[in-house]
Image: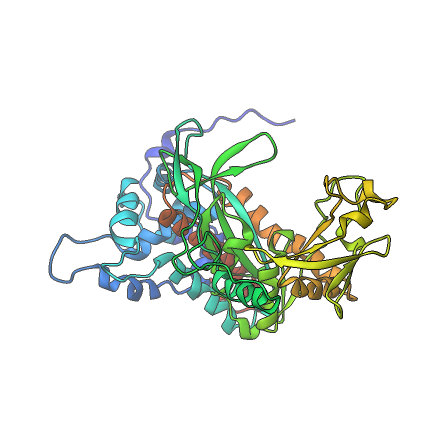
Length: 469
């Protein structure tokens, strides 16, 4: 049995002498984050953005950047709500260096700073501030020997844009150039010459041609955020989104990132991420089926990096022979069909594929014709990319002992990172508009995730300064 007790509300107006530091729990995560990282480097990053002689006194830039860090770390949905929470949360005030009675900056302050001051522009030549913060935290982790770059995992995730699906317009747009177009075009021309065929005219709609007029395609743009892209989320749903290409190591440290419209394919945007990675330190690069392209396999081969890519199911109609059932005779440069007939090289097309064709008269009498082709002339055509050998090289690696176990680590590395970012740090969708602001959001999110991981590792290693004096 317990006696009924009543709590008096008179102590609400009691005057007490208290230290803010005593009111924050000694094991609070923000205490550990503050001891884990010296944020004074931010002053050097933003020094050129402030005037020493003109203007009103500014807010402390460290406090200005710590506020969105609080929002990201604790997964608060909006800056407006973050400011409200800071007003009543003593741990947040302690982290920001605010006293109990100090006024908290208005939430609109951050929108103005991101637009006018922190956004990189050609005029001030200022690099992305949030990427600089991300790099500084990553450097601290590297110096402690916590990061291993021998095996790198790459993948992309979509972030729903702040764009109304019903407010759209159609417009003509030119396809973006592929990173390998010039080299591919050169090899296409050389291959045709070696076959005794006439090279393509350089002003055709062909990849890499000088004076090349790219074909225009009709695209759907959002009126509210035209820099986002229409992403097909399943067979029956479309949303405007951004896509973040991300790389991490085997221990789950985020190494680099890049941001693109949501309708870009992994094979097109991969090179933007890849060029930021330390290629001389990477031994293996692990990616999903979206990266299994001849150009990517060739790029990794040239940089002496082992590709770890999955099996990709052939896009063949049911009931028809799969491509692997036609054996390639490398010595004679021809294919052999399941009925032991030859498909000979005919030409090389503008997309970089060699066309191997069968003899229609011979195929007309073949008992397997219904499983081979539906062509009215009974001619079977097999396409082989000029760089197909690099894909075959990656396929041999896939079948090597231990490679499957390495590929399966994606679940506990890159895929887990995306799950954590979306569930705990508000990366499932964004309230911001424009690619520049999305790069800031993604950079800050990944910086905070690495910072939390760094804090945890320093605690385990006994490297955090003691709380008690």
